[in-house]
Length: 388
Image (cartoon, rainbow, N blue to C red; front, top):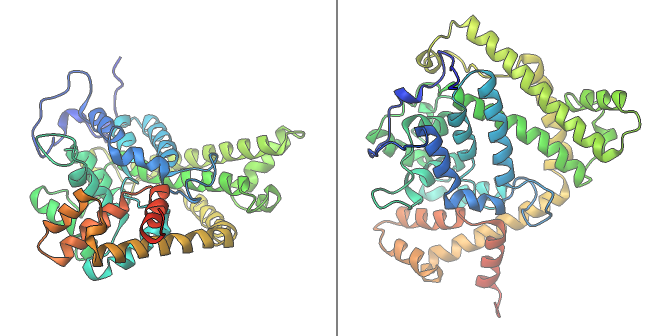
């Protein structure tokens, strides 16, 4: 039985299609096909070796970009199901959202942006777009993955309209693509894309609490007065007075996810009704996002983030990792720019094919951005240590 979608959902039968025309799949909708192309991409596989917060080789229990993306996709799909949206589209955008992240998480992104400052900078959202429209070369008829308009729109605009960013040098790739195929950068994306965006917030705040506890950067006792997670932990202790610390942590995080999702669904329903949203086009031209936390939960989430910032993200152990990561990427970038013949042969050939320093720098940036944490560490060792 085919599920009846809400009137404001994206209807795959009305999709604007693909930039390069292809025959329809006999077994999958266009959005499900997009999802499968993401899952089979090289960039998606590499997420297993890229930092979320902790460097990917620090322990098997900590999240990587891959496990984070899977958690975001599960939450996005659940939200889409509850709102009667297209679950495949929400899942696809969620799985795609971090494909452009370089090694070492946000520290790596900051360093690549600094390295690329003279040549347009670096932005992981733009890099994601470069990956799916250009850098993944898997099909004989076109570069990139040739995803549907709605998927591309959702990946570019999942956090809201981006037309104000089109003058930023780092967004040139999107400007160029948009001139070829208009993604309506001044509007909101679909509700499915908005579900993916808020699922990212839900996932990382919850799993950062979980990973921070695992890493012993703080304790459960430290969290008891922190909004969202504190009440969840108190409710677990009330229901299970003799529960062990491990299960207390797991059940507390699970309940916090539930609270946040319930709040999003209630606030989204309120906004859809208040703003008279009836169609997918109404969503795009709305004056505000429709998928959102209530003000109360948003304020609580800000306080939780403040706790994590002070006790986790700025912990000296993570500061040391970030410092090492920045040096690693800086040294490699500088060497490749001055001695491009130290690049692997295929990447050296790509550099040589470019007729400007800006284009050559972007190729080098693409090479580094695609690295996993472990590969970047090993590559830096091979380049700067004798005997390797």
